[in-house]
Image (cartoon, rainbow, N blue to C red; front, side):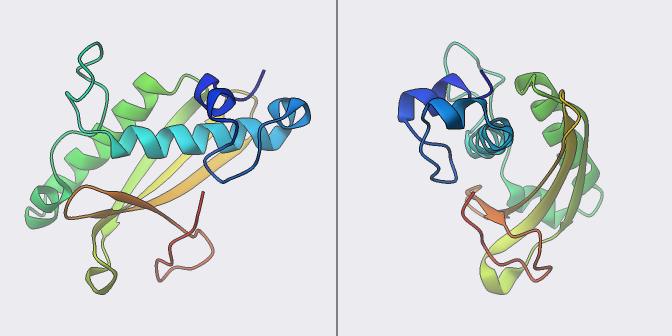
Length: 148
């Protein structure tokens, strides 16, 4: 099964695709499931799950955006977070870029990895000052939000 348990329980992937018998084993299923989990992982605040206190993103992006050398630390934190909590990916690389203040993003993350099956994964996430993430469209460099 390529869909995650949460996707099956919700009956849909994070991008809105309905999970049915065909969707569970399609190549799209694993990619959609992984992308959704990474978004949820970054959305969660570290310490919010009692049984997994290390799950979730540490700190607020506003702190990182104010300190020039801290973007490398944020990138490493996110890389470690994804590597630790998403076993379906390998070779995770995270690039931290300046945000788009007029759209409300203080920091943008570009996450690249390979699924264990070998398929490439890329995901761009903008972080608001509150820490709330928004998936950004890979096709538009100006940071248009996309529903994933």
